[in-house]
Amino acid sequence: MRPRHKKNLESRLEAVSDYLITLRNESLNFNDAENEKHLLDLKALFGNDNPVYLEVGGGKGQFACTFAEQNPDKNILCVERVRDVIVCGCETAKDKGLKNIMFLDCLAEYLPSYLPEKSFETIFLNFSCPFPKKRYASHRLTNERFLEIYKKLLKDGAPIFQKTDNMHFFEYSIESFSNNGFILSNISLDLHSSDFEGNIVTEYEEKFSSQGFPIYRLEARMK
Figure (cartoon, rainbow, N blue to C red):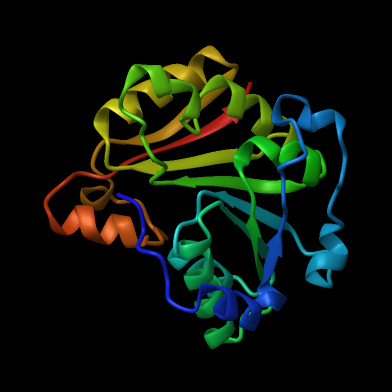
């Protein structure tokens, strides 16, 4: 479902411009994004050299803002391509006065052009769109083409954490990770009924869990 167009979107985005990095990609061929470098300086961006975490597909920013609030000694960069959605996360961060979070308006395909290699402690994939039709499988954020991007962005030994409510997407992700050099651990088929501690609940997680859907979770690291 497409998000409703927000009223006064441009003025709202301008009001949170300190939290938002807007990248216009129209002239960049994402198939060659890695070779066209416009790298962000993460230390300058956050004003410190604390470890940086990355969420791809951050939605309205509930997870990222909570993470930032709970971990003031860590930075998080939240990537979201829908401007009507990303503005909500920026506004939440501003309302909370968070200093260790930034939002990146960018398609995941273009990340190699803008993000330095081996810079991130963890990548979070929270309730990514499952793109259930097979012909759209290449758009899934656990598809091989995205996994190759993540491999380069992660520090050595750093994990990817995935959560979803979609069983078929989860099964697809397990196969994709396994076929592309990742070792899986801490796989949960019902996260909220497990003994896992420290879970940060996202807006979608609240919705689906309240409807009785199990939440699937895994951790993936390169071999």
